[in-house]
Structure formats: C-alpha cells, structure tokens
Figure 1: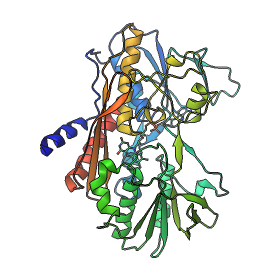
Figure 2: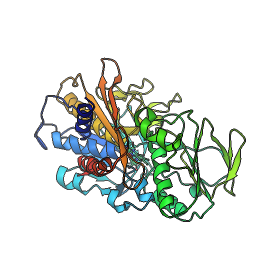
Figure 3: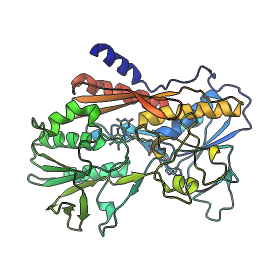
Figure 4: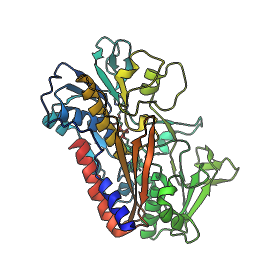
Length: 427
Ligand SMILES: Cc1cc2nc3c(=O)[nH]c(=O)nc-3n(C[C@H](O)[C@H](O)[C@H](O)COP(=O)(O)OP(=O)(O)OC[C@H]3O[C@@H](n4cnc5c(N)ncnc54)[C@H](O)[C@@H]3O)c2cc1C
C-alpha cells in the first residue's frame, strides 16, 4: 500500500497539471494573432505561462523581466554548500524567444493602468510609451517586509531570492571559524517554500561538519512548530528533536528576532541576545508592490485573490481586474508558494486565457500538484508531494504524501525532478 502510494506521488512529481481535454497543437494556429498577452516576471510562473501560451496558441506574447537570466531558488541551498554551482541553476530566456516566439522586454513594470489595459516600464520615466494588453499576467514572486532597524540589510543576506544573495551568504558561511555562531531566521506568515529554512539549516550544518568546524547554529522560528513538518515530520523530528542529527543546531521555536545591531548582536523578542558572526535573516513576505498597488489601491491586502479556474483577479477595487491574472507566489490560494506549483498554475492560467479568447468556458475541474525535495546533507534527501483540486468554490488539498525519511535514492531523484521542472519552464 505504502509502495503504491509512494508510486502515485512519484508519478505526480512530473511538472504536469491535469489540464483540460482540449488539445492545442504546438504553436497551433488558433486565429488569435490579434490577441496580446503581457506577462510580468520571468520566474517559474511567468516563464511557463509565456511558453505555454505560445505552445498552445498563436496569440502575441510579451515577457517583461528586468534580468537577462533567472537564478533558481530551487537547489540553491546546494550552492551554499558547494554541491552545485550557481551557473548550473541559471536559465536565460533564449528558448522562449527562439523556439516559441515570445517577445522579451528587458525591463521592470512600474505601473499598471487597469482601466485602460495598459502598463508602463520603469525605463519610461515620462510614462509616454504605454504597452497595451488584452490580458495581463502578473508573476513577480514575493517582496520582503523589512523591519525598521538601523542595520544595513545589504550586509545581512536573506538569500531567499537566488543570485548575488546566495553568493553573499556563502561567503559569510565560508568565513565562519570554530566557536562562531550562525543565526537563521524563519519567516512568519505565508512565505515561499515552507520547508526551505529547515532544509537550509540542515545543508549548512552538514557542510560545516564536513569542514570539521564546530559552529553553533541558532534557528529562530516565530512559528511555534516546524512549519511544513506535517509533510516532512519524520525527517525534521530526527533532525532537531531528541535524536538530533545536528547537535550544534539550537532550534528556538515561538520566538523571533527583535533587533540586529551593527555589531551583529541579535536580540530576541524573549530578551535573550547573542552575537552571530553570520546572519541569514529571511524576512516576512508579501506580493510585490506592482501587484498590490495595481489591484488593491484602497486596502491592505498582502496577496492577490484569484478565481482558481482562471487565476483572474477577484479584486473589486479597480476596473477590468478580471483581465489581470496572478500566478505563482503572489497569488492567495491555499496552494503553497513553490516553483513546481507555480509552473502548474501557469498552465491552467494559459489554458483559461486561450479558452476565453476562443469564447469557451474555463475547464471546470483543474487539479495541480507540487513537490519539494529537501536535501538534509550532501547525499540524502526527503520529498513531499501534494495534489490540489478545485471543489466548486475554492482550491482544496486532495492528497499529501512524503517520503518516510531521507535517503540517497531521493537525493538523485531530486535532480531528475528539478531538471524536468527547469525544462518545462525555460526549455
Ligand atoms: C531555498 C529555496 C528552496 C526552494 N525549493 C523549492 C522546491 O524544492 N520546490 C519548489 O517547488 N519550490 C521551491 N522553492 C520556492 C520557489 O523558488 C518559488 O516559489 C518560485 O520561485 C516562485 O516562482 P514565481 O515565478 O512566482 O516567482 P519568482 O521565481 O521570484 O519570479 C519572479 C520574477 O519576476 C520578476 N519581477 C519582479 N517584479 C517585476 C516587475 N515589476 N516587472 C517585471 N518583472 C518583475 C523577478 O525579477 C523574477 O524574475 C524554493 C525557494 C527557496 C528560497
């Protein structure tokens, strides 16, 4: 039975949502050449949406992204430990352009005018060259909510968006000496990749052990229990619990960082303080300003509400909100904030937009699935997988499964899973 369950979940690890019965041919001729979709953000969500809109239709697709290449957060903890290079998890957009005819615009979007269905680029300071759209997909990921402390946060990496932040945290880890302290803070509220901070703690603890260094790691978690452990419970209870895999890790649950000063003195809400030679403060998160200011000008909404059949905005604060779709980490459904599910949401959204252009109703029973692999040292990993379905009013969890523990087979499977996802988003 367990074997069967496991097989089913492993099948679900391929980055394929259960799409509609309609089958569009690759770059099909659908008579939609006059329709224009603009996608904002070239992460797992935005790149996949652009790719599939063009695979399944001939509508005009523009992808606006400020960076020439995308650094994946997925597998980025292995860059901290030197087990992967940043280059190996970096993807450019050339395939989207050459294979699928996506128009790339290297810029950021600074403002959206939903009433007139147009947006402005950051480089257009005069706001004289608006870009119009029939449909807009917002996929800008997350924005950090920084506390109001005097510390310069440029020196305290979050490394929760990959790229230079990962390099900076790696440098700080590599400078640690025997007897030093590393502090890692877990975000509170909804944040991307719930098991990620615990995974990172394990990966770094293992790395430091391998260097023969005794470094005290303080994992400060405002949540009262390990967030995400309902799915990776077996692994993490043996990691930070009684039979602690990493005795140098002190798990401080139900407390938070209240201040960090210029000398790297960390003060906790409980009053305890200590000096840490390296600090990985992962701030709380919300949808980026471009999402919130576009859709919620009159209220304080952290994440964007969507119709789960189409990912169209449900905001009633601006006109034509239903022509703006939000996918990936910025949206507010019960699905986790994760790259695999972002890829699945993107395909449902692309399918729904094409159907709407063709005068068809959205597919009524979309299902999505997500997987997360958690390396707990340099040779073993655990996985979790969940399936979600639309129950007629909202997205609910259909099934959750996790590997009984971490092992070497999972560690290898992690790379196959990630490569599938990378190819399905950027390939
Ligand atoms: C350490 C770590 C490990 C993880 N492991 C996993 C895992 O195992 N499995 C999993 O499924 N997920 C994992 N995740 C989560 C995953 O990385 C995110 O959920 C995913 O990246 C979300 O995709 P997205 O497209 O919504 O946002 P992003 O990937 O952040 O992409 C957003 C893009 O939008 C662009 N952008 C932002 N604002 C604008 C603007 N105004 N104009 C134009 N472009 C803009 C940005 O430059 C960026 O390229 C992990 C995350 C971390 C931090």
